[in-house]
Image (cartoon, rainbow, N blue to C red; front, side, top):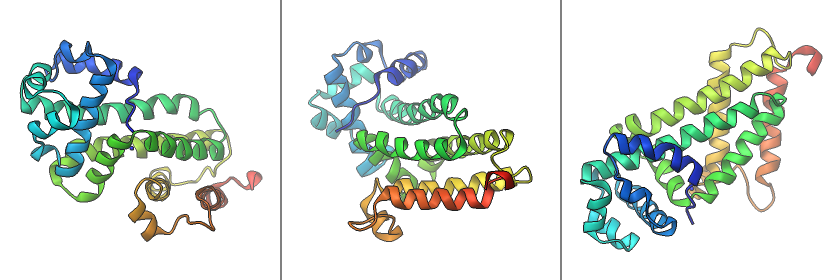
Length: 236
């Protein structure tokens, strides 16, 4: 996912991080552009090297801040890494949970399509964060998998599960649907569709879209396939 960190999400998450001493109030009071530069530098550095090998000097050079200022904002390198993980996970989890409130009231096909399209659009607007999260998901680092990937992945799967459950309750989807297994199957399909649009080498492999076949065309075919397999008889 240039990176415009959603200010509302930031303001929701940052007080908790202050309470945990992961970041100081000085950082929150920074000019938004300077604060944004530090966030971008953090995610870009972590995307290249991973949180465990994050280099404060390189973060300072990328952001235009001094090393002393970074220590003033975060207190220590360990706090800086903790902040990075918390802000990445917290922002995505909060976004998913807020989105679900309105999505679960939409017809299932419409909700799932909106979830995928808007997820891709948001991720494309958050380049440094998306790059960090995508590399975290695919590089296989056990610690990053535990601290960054799994918390987000669980909420993504639960979001799909809640959309399926709402569709079943409205009679759109089969009442005998294996909800737990179906949510995993749909989740992995839409992750492949979405990630292909965020990481070019995945699209080369998955062949989701090209100059002849648009992403939306493949997406609609996938949604039709999902609905035909899961729709209640009267909805088909």
